[in-house]
Length: 375
Image (cartoon, rainbow, N blue to C red):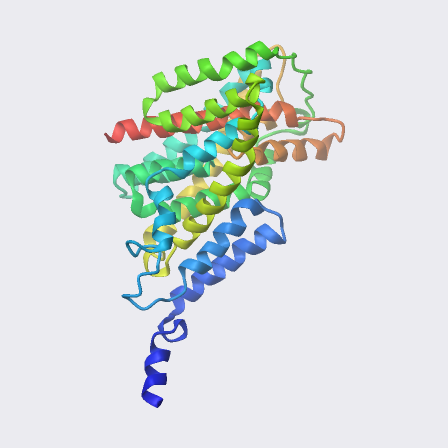
């Protein structure tokens, strides 16, 4: 009987656990705390945090239930991550949720979304300088776009072994937008600049809203064909929203589909952070470089807005430049929050959505460009 008990205990998580699994379980607790208590991107951080717990239960070899065990249930669910299936479905929902009218009403604001993506390429060069191979450097650089689905999509194609740390870094920094961005925004702007009020945007006719996703799809895919799965779903979802005759499909895309995929994506990405795979020096470098990428993207967006004001008659509030990263709609909300600290009647949210949604397009283009370089 004693021997049977010892054999049983030797196969439990209590006997197999080491400090690495405990560290990752604490990380999972931290992400769930940020999501549940601090309300930082709870729809992302709660599934990812719990997924980290799922992935870091020590399991005896041969049981075949871990996420990396071929044929296991978790491995089948993970299929949508390492094949890049989940990100386009997320983009379908984003397209059905997004109103591009603020961007169409003043197209010059799209430049802010483009400028912020330069952080991706600067971080790519930095990662190369630190010794990462080009495919890995591309996956690290894309974190600067603060676009989780795009980061996962590109990493699945170029460096699938880095999906765990890249995805956790991208989503963590997306959730921490209200913490990371305001100090950079305040450092790079004056009080006078923060008080600039934007003009009321023009009303965009429905016909223009319908034409945009069609032309937008053609232009972006001819420019970056490698991003076809992302752009195809993004603009298709937006067409469903704006067409006026496919509301049932648009509703499904922005509710049931995106919610279901978000659950599977968050849980399996979290579960992929198995301690013996995740806790490496390379993962630490990815987190550091990801933070730098995000900070650089924010700073460049703000600086570029200040440069644009040198040539514009209708000045723009430089805070809008921070919304050029693709963390939709959190970066736009942060712009609104910081602007109202100095003028409670200054409403910047709808204007900030223009560079914010163009940042989504910009990061997907950047992913396509990086992927085409690696071919």
